[in-house]
Length: 182
Image (cartoon, rainbow, N blue to C red; front, side, top):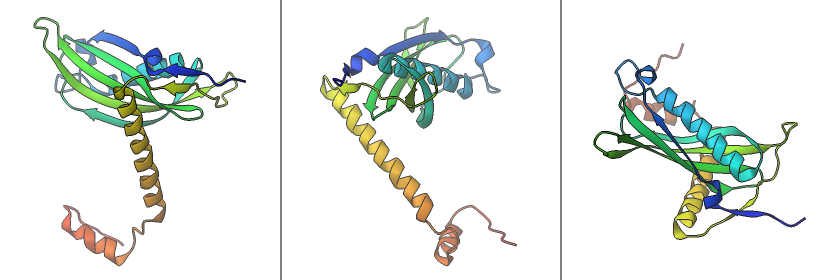
């Protein structure tokens, strides 16, 4: 069977949603949980469009809330597949909010979701290879490789780090904490 490849551009998905008062938190700004829900939806759509399969969220690798979003702003999310593995994809998402009266736009959020393609029985299935068509595609792919490497390093650190050592407990004294071990 011949390997299928698709361009990054073939994965592009964009959604725009008007922010309503019902989406606010207690400070009157748009609730981060609502934005996370929209991010998960667009990551699903992007991964499913690219893979041709149902996709599940394996991890939310990064969510950077950069600026608050106001009621009445038009939020646009743009997603693309930045990296593919065997059955997984890293979907990058950019969130911009636009004041629809003035036209002023601001970058509010950048997020990276790892999505996994599934068949009808829930088994992981291969995804198409990725065609990198420009230097922006290459940059995003390389950044994904770095992200994967850091994630593996962090997981290894978690397995090997000794949280009970005398050195660790001594080093923690410089932080704004109190340790009460009974």
